[in-house]
Image 1 (cartoon, rainbow, N blue to C red):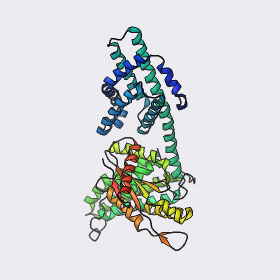
Image 2 (cartoon, rainbow, N blue to C red):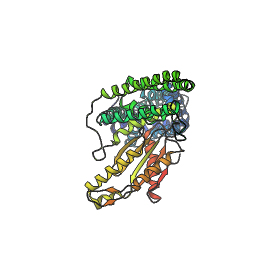
Image 3 (spheres, rainbow, N blue to C red):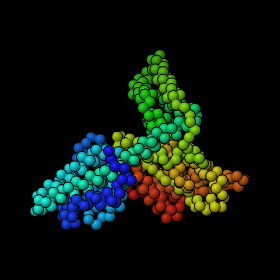
Length: 460
């Protein structure tokens, strides 16, 4: 069983040092320092030989950064000048990162065994006396095992929090007005169906130019189904059946309808089959919603948005989807300018009223598949699904202008206004969602430094 964080105390680490004297520890540190890069290569070669781990780590940025970090971690761990508190903190942070990325700890332990074995072989190949050699090898195993135990404890605690967060996220959505959400998604579904018939069956000569170029997956309903429903209704069989019907319509029935338009009789049969599939999707959608009961709980009290504890669950799933489909997404931190001044001048109650109006405006502006969170007194966080370099700053600017144009109503008749600064970060393949938050925050700081009321894209 892994040790709990409170058991990995400085005295525990001090005990591990007692198996070797200072001179032996320095010899080991010198050997590790000399071989750190090669040891890191061996460690990640072991991890990348695993199919699951390779999906998470087989990325140029991650490979370069993690190998360098691993070499630095080894030197820090075996350095005779590293305080025990720093050692403990380093292992706990590493365990938390592994939990966020999803790297299984048994693979980390496998890699650690290779490191211990390799260091021991190098020590054996040296010129140490036999008694000192035994002391050095025991020290290597003690220190590495203690580091892995500390990581394990942090990993388990963080993984447990993430699991609870995922469940809470689903419960949060159950707590919304699910009847209204069902009607909204049914409306988006029927809009898609109507567009299909306008484009492929009805008289389209007078339809607006450029109408109906979206495939199912990029419609409002399709985005919601892929990104939100799959998480809200985790494991629901209806999702696969809905996707199956949508694919049948797009890949089989619509091409047939195109060929059959010249014959009304043939076309009617295809239209009837499409209508049957749309009705089937409606029924599946209703069944999926009906299985869940609304339970008012878990929203931000002022804005009724998702709060920050749901972000890890959402971000980890979007990272997995992006890696699987070679797609990308973006994270934006939207920060209200001079918020402290606004709150001081208007008071908390009026400010909360204004915040709810800003939240409502942002919610109306983002797409059905996007996620909007309130993450602080003056900050919102937006996760834009399937966003790209070509459109992400346009979307950020539209959010900024939307807030700037608002005439917010307080408790009296006087209207006021607010502006926001936005830091934007595109997913670059890094599997740790904290990386996205850090980059977005750096961009936000830059936006503030440039004068506020602007959007800045983080450097890749």
